[in-house]
Length: 230
Ligand code: CA
Image 1: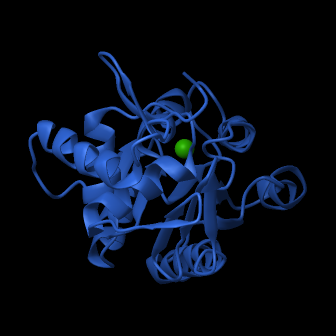
Image 2: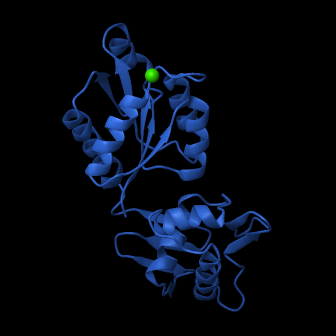
């Protein structure tokens, strides 16, 4: 699936340059034009990387970055900060300990793309041997194996991706639209009820007769990983 990059920038021409170059590289791009909108999008869309301008209306880039780092859902999301040449550049190093990298304006698209690749590589290279766990559920990402209470669970590729979304944020409620975006990708158009079909399969595979249901249905909102949280 294409990595999803959120561009937070209030200057339309720069937004277009960034979008053009990032999409050309095969990334999926969404845009926020101020800090508040950025935080909303980060909450709902959980991008793989945020390119964040320092000077923004409402909340500054620094404040947005601080909030990204305080939210458990986004604390590991890589951030590349954009800053104007001059006084800010040095301060960025000191102040923005939360950012993974920064790029000084004006920058060449080549330079920015190199930073994006490097930051994404760092953030994903820690995950191949990653194991996700919740309750008696274990997902071995490298081996592509799932067990529940030591018993192997056989999942189709879609159910595997759905479960991975849940295990990355246990307890969080996902709407059907969010699950479509995160487990299928945004370029695919599917009916939200498709999610229900796959949730049913996932439940069937995960829950042996006496097991507590792994997936919690949240009426009017969506689904969450919900063992022991009812
Ligand atoms: Ca700006």
